Amino acid sequence: MRDISAIVEGFLRALEAKRPLVAAHARRVSAYAVRLATQYGLAPDVVESIRLGGLLHDAGKLLVPARILNKPGRLNEREWIELRAHPDKGMELLERIGLDDCTRDIVLHHHERHDGKGYPDGLEGNQIAWPVRIVSVMDSLDALTSPREYRAALSVDGARALISREAGTRFCPSVVSGFLSLPPALLEPGSADAHPDYYLPDGLPESSSVGATRAWIATIVSR
Image 1: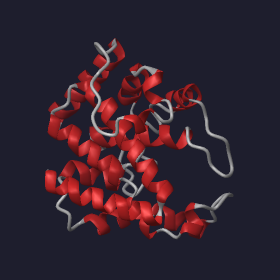
Image 2: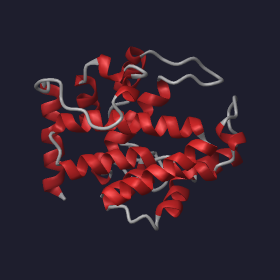
Image 3: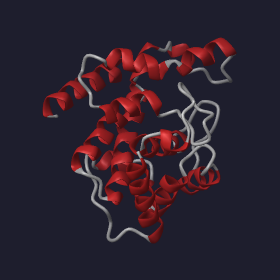
């Protein structure tokens, strides 16, 4: 895993050179996702896959034109189709790295939705792997709390409220429960930059987090 981590870091440096905002977003998502994953007591190898998956989830945006990524207004249909292809493009870029299945799932499926209306494969519910669901929520958190040319950044409370409202449609309800159990201070912009790797749970998880863990165990057993 150490060799893969070195390769991934090299890829991130290349991404920073061409798509610095995408790379910075990826580092924050990875840190947030690890922070949430540690609340569940997941095995270290799973947490490491989540860390790598968070770093690489938008790798395909290296092949998306900057004019599309930076467009201040709505994308037209052709541009939207090109943007939606970035998970598949990411897999093409990364296929030779030798990623494990968990990390690959995150790269390919982080835009799937709990209700099956996501892309690229229209997966729903338990068809979406648990680590993917974690990264999906934290991906949205960072997107919402980051400023865009066409809107101001939401506060952490505003992002938490929006994500909560989309539990059961866009997001897995169990993961949203775990997400809401995290102290808001751990989700403030800039907190992910202070300690870019692993985070330990802050005391015992709340009941909502325990419930999410039980839901995850039930998902694994049912496979």
